[in-house]
Every structure is written in C-alpha cells, then in structure tokens.
Amino acid sequence: EVQLIQSAGEVKMPGESLKISCTTSGYTFVSYWIVWVRQMPGKGLEWMGVIYPGDSDTRYSPSFQGQVTLSVDTSLNTAYLQWSSLKASDSALYYCARVDVAGVAYWGQGTLVTVSS
Amino acid sequence: EIVMTQSPATLSVSPGERATLSCRASQNINSDLAWYQQKPGQSPRLLIYAASTRATGIPARFSGSGSATEFTLTITGPQSEDLAVYYCQQYKNWPLLTFGGGTKVEIK
Image (tube, rainbow over all chains, first blue to last red):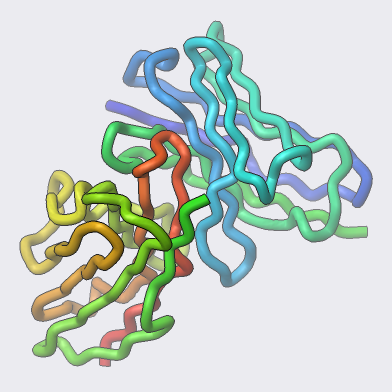
C-alpha cells in the first residue's frame, strides 16, 4: 500500500527556520517525483515545486522560487520542505504527494504550519 | 506557466440535477488534465485523468470531457456526499503541474 505520512503541525515565530517531512512507503521512492502543494486558509491548491528523488532534480513554481527549498533523503524514503526565515504569510496547510504519469493519486495528510508572534 | 481558470466559483445543485463544472487552460494542453475532489478536512482525491478517464473506485456519476483548452466535469445526480471543492490540474508540462482555482459544489 502506497503511503505518504507527513510530520506533525508546527507553530513558529516569524524569522524562524523550519523543515517539514514526508515519509513514503509501499513503492520505490527514487522512481517517482514528489510534489509539494500549499493551501492557505480557505483557499485553493497551489503547486510549489517538484523533486525527483532519483537524482534530486528540482523544479520550483515561479511563485515559490527562492522562498523554499525541497530536498530528499533516499536512505529514509523521505522528502522535505524547508524555510530559512518564516513569515506570517507562510501559515498554511502543506501537502506532499506522489506524481504519477497522469495526475496525482497519492497524497499525504497535510502538515499545518502556523507562523505567529 | 500554464494558467487554469475554473468556473463558476460556487455551484448549488439539487440531488436530481446535473452539475457542470468548467475548466479552461491558457494554452493547448491536449488531454493532459486531471480533476480532483477535496472534501472538508480531507486531502484531495484524484477523480479523473486524461480528461475523461475515471480513477480507480470513482463512481460512474462523475464524468469528464473536453480537450485542448476547454474541459468539463459533470456530476450526474449529485449526492450529499459530493459536497466538496473540485479542482482541475494540467500536466502538459509534466512534472510541472498547475491547478485551477476550484469550484465549490453545494448540495441543496
């Protein structure tokens, strides 16, 4: 069974750094792209970027380029999304998901990030 | 970047009616389009891929059509459990994916 399990929600202060995780199982991690998606409160889905664990090839949405960093640890079958300096506007629900040839069939449960002073 | 535009923003339908949701791409994406359903408090679920193919386990009342720049998701005889926000997504520039803004479906 394919599973993507995300790390628990976080409460941070502006300016702090953060790294959230997405641990996968049930398939060959290095063979599928992972996408990260942001959902701000009451809003729609925004794709942030994708990473290919096989060689760490990474593509960012223009809206998120330079704002976040995607990475993987193939020994742990885990993908990461990180910020070096959080802003209040980064408060959102973040999903990781596995990119298939036609669509995204497997999603994590989401990680809620709250940034507040 | 390919921009996806959905309409209407909100759609209110009765159980016996047909719900028609639209999605427009800013450029030709052939049939490289997926539809997702997101119920309150849940992760999105893949409904349709390749514009018209139902994903595994998706009821037959959900159907997709269209190609190039104009696409439609139809819910024939919507049920109360279909209350959700529906998103289209293009994957013409796979693995670069972009979503539409979503259509919220309300059941009268």
